Image (cartoon, rainbow, N blue to C red; front, side):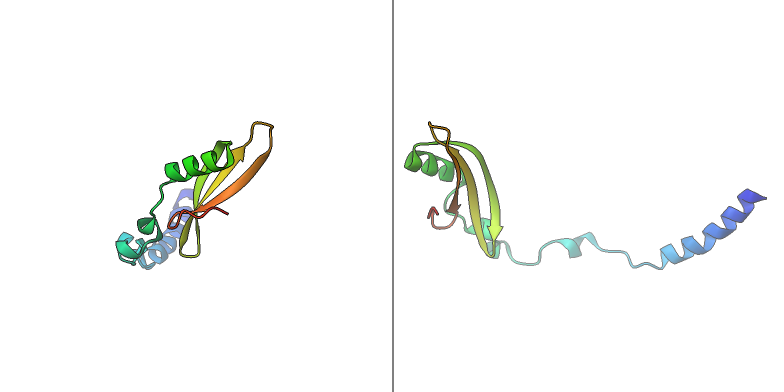
Length: 99
């Protein structure tokens, strides 16, 4: 008897579930053309940015990651100097400017 009641309660829930619109996976993909995406406009790769920062500051990169700031790609590079000082440098992926 208890199993029959739970099945009867499940039927309306299934009916409601079928009325939910199905999301097309294609609609989740970014609509901008590839040429307008920030990652396609980079002139400096992450490896190049790390090498630039290491040579400029005479320090070793201990962490490097890419982030997007507005429409710009920025590399955040954490550096460690010989005397133990740690700081972060940002490199603009398009221009190579460090700040």
